[in-house]
Image: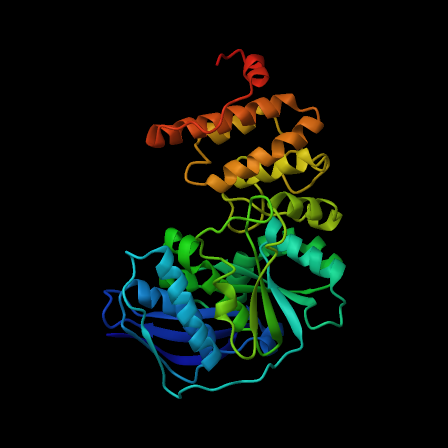
Length: 411
């Protein structure tokens, strides 16, 4: 009863370089899958079929589906093998009823320590506030000749189509690549776009968000370890610093434990709150116009301006006095009706950290003289708490009398 990861290899075809491996399930009722990671041929020297990278992305799905062992072709770094025991412990402590004993790792060539290949760092990059802020902070404070300086960013486009085609690759990566070009040029970093089907190893958003996200990102970073010695994964904390602990698939207790002896994976940016990250990006014109946060456009081509992530970011930029003239969104203003859609579509439900985040925007909006948005946010937050109160019978949030009175309500 083991997952088998075999046929690791590399191909160059039609202007594309691909690393690949075949995953077979023995106990789980799942079809075999050939995993691939594609880049343009000009980045061929940076990518290699590292068994450790394939193990990182595969081991949690194997555990989730009940495989007792993971057999993998090649050698595995003993540092990674030991670090994974911590990953298992952390995830099981969060989800004690969901997982049994973790799988045993069985590399065909045993354990092998490799020395670092590269002398530079990379960062996973979506164009969202988290990844933009990490890139900006790094360029402001880390000298370019320091090993911790970011010299390359990697964006991921998930695609199930196995065809090796520059046309298909361009179709899936072009939107985000063009959208963030101003920030890339200003930061003077290489932008490597990846097209991969790693998502379809599980194809489950809940599993990805809560348990697997950091593993996927660290796996992609590790495929580039022949050129880089450190991979930054941007922290996604929303609240005020210092943050409270939270169980999430990208976490400071997870990413560092996907490191090996030759590449460090770093959960970066925990020292900044979401609003401080947004402020850092807002003061960087090239970054401001490159923001891509939309939940409704996974290609990164556009921001819709109406999903929770767009509303959240636009409202924060407005609160900072930076939305006017911003080219990243379809409009550069926010009105009360837009804010009230947060309640209409129950965008906060299940996300307590967003409650704290929107609460933190109220003083800034007050300073901007936007009482209409302050009233709307108080209404959104109160309705969220009232829904929670139906379960707990405790209302922890009360709309201030003066704000409620302006809305014509009563206490």
